[in-house]
Amino acid sequence: MTVVPSPVVYESWGQRVVFGSGTVQADVAAAVTGLGASRVLVIAADGERALAEDICKDLPVVAVFGGVRPHVPADVAQAVRAAAREHAADLLLSVGGGSTTGTAKAAALTTGLPILSVPTTYAGSEATPVWGLTEDGHKRTGVDPKVLPRVVVYDATLMLSLPTRLSVTSGLNALAHCVDAWWAPRHNPISSALAVEGVRSLASALPRIVADGQDVAARRDILFGTYLGAVAFAGAGSGLHHKVCHVLGGAYDLEHAALHSVVLPHVVGLNLAMAPDATRHLAAALDVRTDPFAALLDLYARLDPPHSLRELGLAEEELDRAADLVMPQVPGSNPRRVTHAEMRGLLGRAYRGDTPVTVPLNASVRKSHPDD
Image (cartoon, rainbow, N blue to C red; front, side):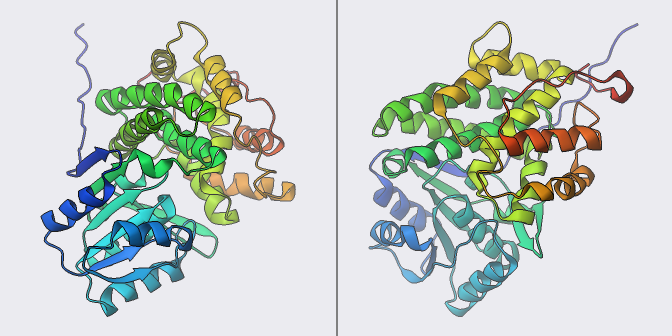
């Protein structure tokens, strides 16, 4: 009998991306001109306002919005939309990390204004059409082409002042985009290949910036890996890891990048027994023939990120409720049918900072999947 392969569907998103080192002012100015903008609303957190003003000193800026907060609370979304209307902005220019990009996306979602993004961390949000808003302890996410930045200007020198801890957690957030793309709802050979190259670049470069934070070449390699992971994530959708982190981040206001760092190896350990394609991809990306999970843990040991949800401020008495909140969000595409007990166990290990483990497959909960 002839086996007909399943169709492959990959949706790409139009965007101009500029990679540079020390050229951010010129690259941003060229982008503003190319977009035909004459009234720029700059979005930058207070800690990055000076940098933003320096980058934009020769641009037609009408105002600077500084009310950036993690996970984009609903009141922040309303405030930035009001600022865009009040100043009749025709371009949103975000300078900062994922929260700053997310704030610009909140404005673009309702105003339709284009975004020019200048990332200062490895969040990856600048390369996805995904938005997120938090209200009453619940984080909602969605996909809309209006929120995808029209232009992204990466400059490796902007990352040189990024503290080592934040460099590591932000870089592992980028790596999580790659890994989650291997079992997300729309995972496909194209997004998976992008993710392999993303992990390869990140795993090579992150230890180099731990050794030398001023290594511009390594910072540039991390930006390449960040972009590849974000594009893979945009094509494949949000997998189990991101669902867990979105729920915990929205409900408990936990530090975004550190949260991803803590949770990722526990999700990988849970899924690998049922994900042979992802296992093969991870092995190729980390350049090992056997036990890619051990190689991932070795990378973690070299980077020394935060290890527990307890460190991030989650209370132990919230673990049962957290598992209850996560379970309805588990994607149907996940290679393993996750039980409530398994999710509670994962959160417990992540809370305590236990060494991540591969979770044996329980035959009673085995799920058929194309990766079988």
